Image 1 (tube, protein in one colour):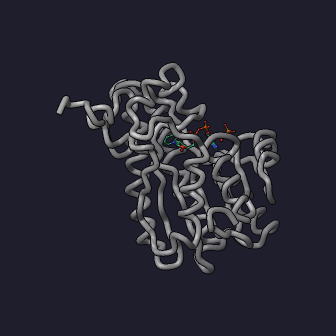
Image 2 (tube, helix red, strand yellow):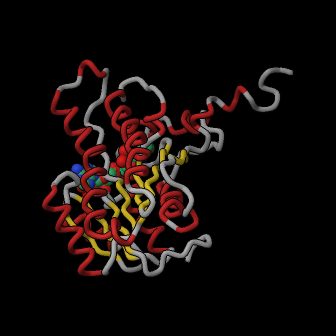
Image 3 (cartoon, helix red, strand yellow):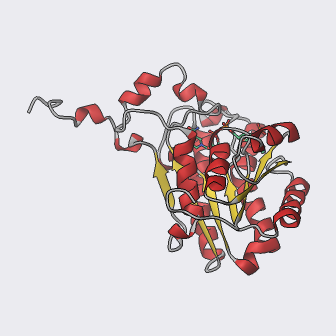
Length: 260
Ligand SMILES: NC(=O)c1ccc[n+]([C@@H]2O[C@H](COP(=O)([O-])OP(=O)(O)OC[C@H]3O[C@@H](n4cnc5c(N)ncnc54)[C@H](OP(=O)(O)O)[C@@H]3O)[C@@H](O)[C@H]2O)c1
């Protein structure tokens, strides 16, 4: 049990869990007592990540859009642990940087395949294999980028916006047995987001009400909450976890800033 959340006896699959937010989610779910299955494109990375989890953890190689690999992962999870109660659709990619009209079809397909099709694929597989009959909770990793507009991130943000929409659609389609929610992180200290913070972390902190960038564990805790019975009356929602980044420049609001 952690923070009052008890996931003992539950099993979670977390896609894209070799590092960053996915690994932190696996660690948080395991800390709450859950069994975790961590996927990565490489078996070695999946094994290394599983070894960083204190609890029952299994690493499985599965490219997020490889249907055969996803099916094998689902089957192996059921054989090993006997249930799939939680699915975290976390694997994400951003190969497309720049104005939308400068992107090519390959970048579009990769972005939307991994960020949007994979959550549909994995949710479909776990629903048919377990959750459709027994119930469960799905958490998608979206982004605050999917709620606004940013230079150079248009294609990625469109995929996350669609994932937020899809979260609501799937919540309705899979109700009442399966809850489907999303987290929408702000800038978090991970490899994927390195260009957003690495060379100007102080600037990002200054524009964040809570004065720091996110850590993967901040998002892992929110994912664990949404996956658990503590959120048993929450579905179709997207929880923003961004330290206040969406609120705007906090320095304009702080005491003395207006000279009043
Ligand atoms: N960091 C942020 O500021 C931020 C903000 C909003 C949303 N997000 C979202 O958070 C999620 C996790 O990203 P992160 O920031 O934690 O990045 P990260 O540390 O770079 O981790 C990305 C993870 O996704 C996996 N992955 C990438 N492509 C994959 C594929 N085709 N199949 C399976 N796994 C794949 C990687 O595994 P391998 O390389 O080992 O295969 C890795 O485990 C993504 O959906 C991202 O869009 C991040």
